Image (cartoon, rainbow, N blue to C red; front, side, top):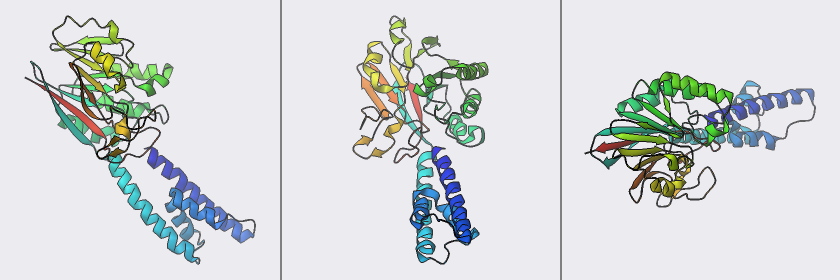
Length: 319
């Protein structure tokens, strides 16, 4: 969504400035430089530049515009198609975990208000096709920069119709703490979402605990319980603490796959701008703990993913 919003803004600006410059030419007043007008197209305002040229009949006699603006537009069009595919091509990653019962867990992480069709239909259809027994959501369903509670609500509204949903916050929700976020929590809990920050929920075969950071995990009284201990977190970096606390399975996100995955090297950087973060996607083991890190679905500050498709994680717990 950020990429689309940014492109809309710069193209509207580009179109307007081409119109302004045409008006200035008619009035023989001080003009906008040709370099600046071409730079607008180079910066992503190519469509506004094209429309401005031909709708205002401006710069259509100058070869530097009639040649370079279409060339720049073609390059940008290819780049946008590439970026949209990288940002919206949903993939499913499946893992196996051995236990004494069968359960299929779907993990959703870092939605960041990403738009996957009306009422999040594309995303929910993919989740439904995974046939989950439970759905776990590991933070940043809402983005603090381009906040839309409606997009997150649409996902939760559809998800609870598929399977029981367990949710913990991420850093963006923590930044949004206040009346509006409290109201959002109330609304999704009314749908049936179980918000488990700082608490443990018991099922027949599992203890499912949640925490934004690791401040609560020492409070969980689950060491003597023979059921599978599942921990939902946001940041994967504290795996040592999660393992020490006795978690069997940990679900985490936050790193967005490193935004750009370099083959043979890994994810390029974390949201904290750590280069080549250790935990960026996939399965990791620490003693008796297995951690699954999702690449997530959306973006926040950087609107582009490369070789890092948005991901739904499925863990098959099998006998």
